[in-house]
Amino acid sequence: MERTQRLAKGETLAAVTGDFAARLGIAARILPMSNDPVRTLIHTDGGALAFQHYFVRDKCAPQVTGFSFAGAQHAQPAPGVVEALSSPEPVCIVICPSNPFVSIDPILAVPGIRAALIAATGPVIAVSPIVGGRAIKGPTAKMMQELAIPQTAEAVAAHYQGLLDGFILDQEDADMLPQIGAAGLSCRCVQSVMQNLQDKVELAANVLDFAAHL
Image (tube, one colour):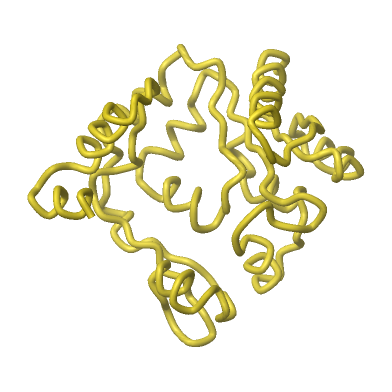
């Protein structure tokens, strides 16, 4: 509610996000993709729906036919985003195991961000959100099925074609290593499902070690 009120008064999303992070004692710098509004629209068999209507009101029930990101073509990356991606300082850039279609693609739709990732000096690594044909959380696998995309880690890697230097998939999907590798993408199998803090620490360590060997 505070966020909505402050944005309505004219504060930027980056400023509000930075203030929240400071108040919560978060040391890492958190940047939104843009200060400009970008709306994710889910195209379904019943028409286009705002993401929150699809996800909350309709409980992901409608059949998905596609996606669009209203306002993305006119949006600009938030100050510091392209600079962070272009900096030689990061050991790597990690695309976390989020929904590729409605979590990651809206970011990539903002002009300048995809190009900055492609030009990044550090390796870009994605962690698969699909394990054993299932989504870690949310409607990713359902969306893939309805779009006639195989519900596999390999399909996720293909979705990010041209962006990645490395790909992390779960041990459960080890049989896909040869196919992904044959496409020219370095990959590593690890325990990627995070059920507790130790799992999170170990996955982060594995990603950093992988990056160091790319």
